[in-house]
Length: 320
Image 1: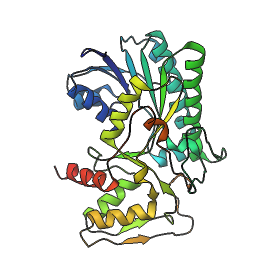
Image 2: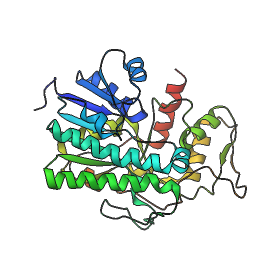
Image 3: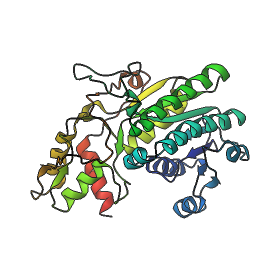
């Protein structure tokens, strides 16, 4: 049984998911180290409640100089801004692939008992699962010519490293393929689409879509994602990938916009489309992906929080 003094190392702890995970572990009384690029930011965020390690994850020499006694490593660090992925594809790929390999080497050196890698539903690429749910063994096409593909291709390669470290070295690493994650704690200036919709509705402004909004979205609440990551650290099968999603929250982007209008718009917002030719916002290509939650449910974990509840919790945290 896990003891109170079980030590965790969280990479990317100043990001959204990493920070919420770190706060939850601290609430549980766990000993936590964080591995970040910006040590000052981490210290401001967590005061002195965590041990702060600083390194460039893509620089193997930087990580070789570190030592940790962490028993569980959860690797959250990754680029999150679509415009950055499209404009800096080399840096994006290096951050994901080299960063993950170096974290796996660190886990091997410190003989970690468990590792969880945060992947993304974007690894599925172009796939149409409207007639059914997409399971973890189905992958679609990713356009290797597009700069924005640096993110999903990087995530695929990082997953491959995880599987091979489990196969070749016996490293107990699990892969969490996350649906879009939000709820409490989202930064008020977050640039992602779900946050843009919420800001517009709360201000009584129109919710503007720069695409037809036909892409299927898959969502899961932040507190449930944090719970799933900790569950996988203990119960997941090494080398395996698991979708982390609430199937009930699957819907097209345009339908989510309408939900936000009705939930947060107070009768003042409308959903409008601005499809000016040549407009580019770095969005991922349209997909009909509908993630299956069956594999994770099969080992004992399920999500239950609705998209409406997620938006209400987001709005509540912004009003605090």
